[in-house]
Image (cartoon, rainbow over all chains, first blue to last red; front, side, top):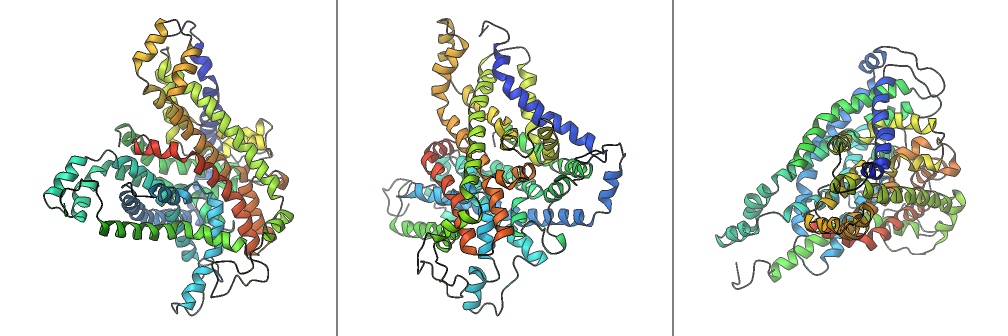
Length: 290
Length: 283
């Protein structure tokens, strides 16, 4: 025995166990139950069978939201898998001042999505810096509607996500680079392999598992996106509400006194179904020590 | 290598120039937008911020926008609200995750395996999936539209329990067994052997609990309805949507939300990057 009283471990675990049950397990079960009801914040809650699920099939906004997620993934996946690796290699060497650069590159990660959303909203405004510069340099004759066009708004949110994600994935790669075989690098250098060649044939294979881990993380993130789209569209979901994400729909239907908790819960179940596959892959990768 | 004699870590002058050029280029991209916002927040009302030839350095620098934004919305009260939530979340995670992580890593007891399995299982559940039901529960507990309600669900996160468990696992068994033979109690082992050896991970848990609480938007947006109780992120969105289209004021508001988090991270970052370089942090 490593402890005298049998209940000692349980006393230590108790707070975490309570939180696990109250804020994870119960809500998970309750989400499924609610999804079969017409629950509202005040009253309601009768069993409605699959109504909430059949309703999804006719939900135009849901189709848009899923299309938006796929576009999100298609753009973010290649960019956020490779650019942060290049950054990690760039900050790897202990040059003078490198700590400053590392912190600076990580700053967008620690800033709230609301803060960076408002900053980007100002940059991409019709009369903001980006349009102003582009017009002044003669690239544009009038402002591009970054925040009021259905597709431009989506791509603005995507670029915000990429910009904010660079440092996050850079740090994960930095951690992985520490384990890349140094001797292999040196041997390749002695054999006359150039920098690019060594990057392609030593660094990239060395961090292959991490790359996989990161692409799954990004795929899941594309389905979970909320703040970027919410802030850039000022809560409206863009022109005609076409720039919604699945989570924005959940928030919209779930919130307030008129909320439709049943439908919001059904959408939550859908979110779980589309993310659980990638999440399981992620956990397997993590356990393998990617 | 060119130049011979130089070790693998040597950097030639040409490479140095290339590297610093690239570093500065990325720096402009990552930090530029923040500096632009800072600059906008310091520009006087007489200075045209919409011009096609904007000046990066404010021509009439002023702190007036900071004063004015606090008159438009109660920014300091919002900051206080955010701080209150962050305090609960940091304390809850630091204490709760340490206790549970220690028990899972260092104490042998019946049921520890299934318990660990349950903690792991929660990780496949994105927080957004349960957010509506969490709200139903928080309301049922009587914490709807309150800061306690905002803080509660995140005040003990399963990921942090697992991180602390990993940290405790890396303490060599020998040290612990010696203490057990000497008759140390569980509490003494935790305080005198455990804690000094997990300070790095504990710092990471503290930093990220703070950032998580301070930056969170979706959850407080759902929980809070009374504008007096808004946290900074919800308050800023409120300011942007409702009160003003003056970019100087919004810029001042965002800086008030942004600078504290930078300060916290700057102070504690060495723990974080030490862990990163040791290959300990996996995201």
